[in-house]
Image 1 (cartoon, one colour):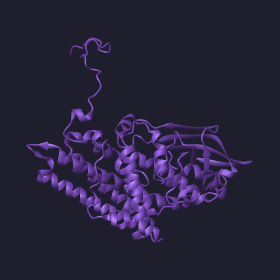
Image 2 (cartoon, rainbow, N blue to C red; image 1 turned 135 degrees about the horizontal axis):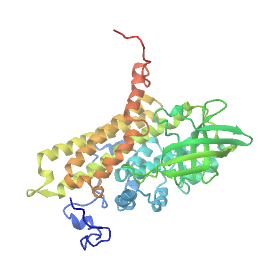
Image 3 (cartoon, helix red, strand yellow; image 1 turned 90 degrees about the horizontal axis):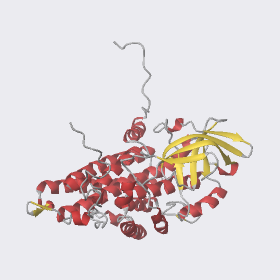
Image 4 (cartoon, one colour; image 1 turned 90 degrees about the vertical axis):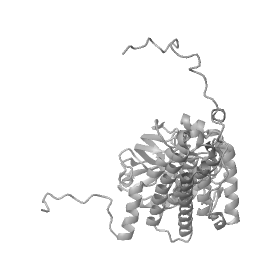
Length: 435
């Protein structure tokens, strides 16, 4: 094979090699890209009627905001793997940060209202919904449920307005599903604590003003919680590169080397790993609404696309196989919404169990994967372009399938609850053969 001369000097390239790409509306005028988001057509069973007037009004307020502010820019920022910081004030103005927290400038929403808000953001962009969930339903909620009165008054008001941003550090490189075995340490010293260790996959980590960090107390060997402020000596957070999903979310590695945390920033309500469960119980319900929102958006996109795109002299919506796939997607969305709604009501009534939350999250996520995969088929070649939403949603679902408990771990949580037998660890091996 003859190797061509050095082509990096541009001599062997075409004159139009570095020309900018055509705008998608010019390159493919037959269908509307997601930058102009489609109307919502996915509420086939009119589940909106299950909501209170206040919840319905919140839904429309969030929907209008993200369709206007996020939809036109999301493909660009997703491609660049950067977060659109300029939209944070817009999200703050929605008054959804803090969700269910009452007082301290927080909205005090119902779990149902908070879930609907999460779904509406995720319907347009999953990364923005994750940004809000990490900030609000993990970090803020931990401070609200486990913090002192002084900590709540100090941190929550600015976090509720999104004037400051928070992250939540539990997962470590060696401990994901087995998070209770984490090895970041907290050593008591005069006036405070010294934190040493490493966290991984922490959303918002690189720009958070407030970091909620879990570490093992070297005296009690129990898990404690700490509030770490940005830029303290010994703290470093770096971005995880090369993700294929949630590309706008700034997941980071957090390094803690002799980080001093004053006594007043230790969370008094976290004395063991079990204390994280009261936070995760709420967040797992809300995370289940992310794939619901994503599936709603994908259905809406496919519904419009099939009516606009023509082949063989007819719109794609006129073909039987496409109608069957679209109906399959629509049925999935209805079932997902109803399970998510029921989870909210069980939680609000004080009846929800960990197994119910886990099954809801795992089952909904599996159905969302199926739904988005069908959408990918319906869009043909455009199903691999983020401009038409489905490809982006296809990738963004993969992190959701894993975080807040993988499908398998959540299944085992439910399995333990219904059988009374825990099966998280393999049975001890025996040297004696059963034969």
